[in-house]
Image (tube, rainbow, N blue to C red; front, side, top):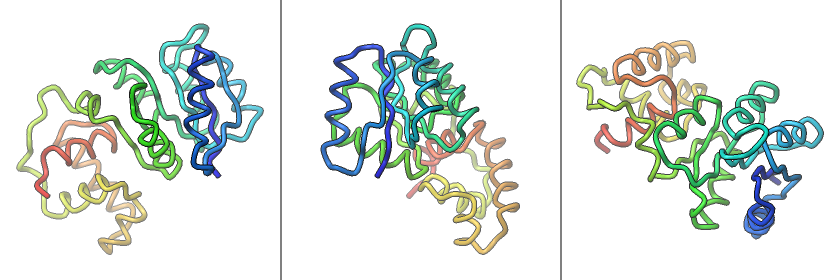
Length: 204
């Protein structure tokens, strides 16, 4: 069972999300919050796996709340759900620690799937905003070695470092070294951006 906290400043949206998320029975809404400060207070009191977080809220916005939640409770994942799709908002949310990013007009089934993916440690991103995480001047790099491409493909498929190491028969330390080199060569700063770059620039 995935325990979710819904944070949005509109009561109808909170109620609607609670209804949509619980349809299949494997997701339960453990609480709701009308702003970021309430969300932070709630996760201190209630066991939560995922916070579905709006960005535009009073008192404490979603970016600040995401940063605070992740700092205090690194085991809790944050799925940003908002009407904003611009580059700056997406990057700020991901930089604050958001695991996934969906727009509010997403299909209900896609939203439930995103919650499940976030709870499993994956990084679902609405394709309409995913491009915002790519470098402005991103271009395919011919500098990646064959091994680095293998590592990047596995990361893009949602593998954790430990899984990458096991599949390739190398140590986690080596995986981390490869990722550091990959990030520098393609001009990104995190796994999510690297995965997006891979999907756009590595042939299947």
